[in-house]
Length: 199
Ligand code: UP5
Ligand code: MG
Image (cartoon, rainbow, N blue to C red):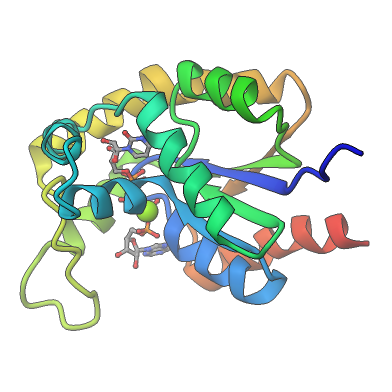
């Protein structure tokens, strides 16, 4: 008998739209395992693996790492988890990754959460978490949280990631959230999609 496929929700949105923040809440409330492809790639740069330097250089420029590398990390993390429900945060970021994931896993996402937010607000958030002297915001310590790379990340998002959202929109899979509001308000909207899914 064929093995049951896990439930996968893709969580997309521009840099600083709040994907990580909201995924942490969803994981806690709805029992999903949160896998951030960006976090997995950052961990890989620290692991001393042969790909580490290449990944670090790509991320410093806001470029998308090859689908093969990212999918391998995601599949390993999924296999290591005992869960069968996953939030894939920040993946897939381009059509190549979307098609490759579908091809390798034959998994279709249950739906795609899309955090819509203005560049102005995202920039404010990203610069905020990279500024010493703001005790309420933990420092990210991320090499890509500087204005030059942030602008590149915005460009890559518009050019490469929006087409993925369009792809899923045409299949009726996208759940769009106004992510420019306070964290709690955004989560109220997010919750509605997960509650209706569990009913
Ligand atoms: N914050 C969050 N929500 C807020 C709200 N509603 N109101 C006010 N403040 C809010 O939030 C960002 C900041 O805003 C935080 O300080 C938070 O407190 C505050 P966060 O939840 O971290 O937003 P998120 O969308 O997760 O932002 P992140 O910077 O992680 O987005 P990116 O998409 O840029 O980063 P990611 O780690 O996914 O990718 C980084 C790089 O990795 C990419 O540029 C790329 O080079 C590479 N990558 C790949 O190549 N392939 C992949 O598949 C994934 C990544
Ligand atoms: Mg994140």
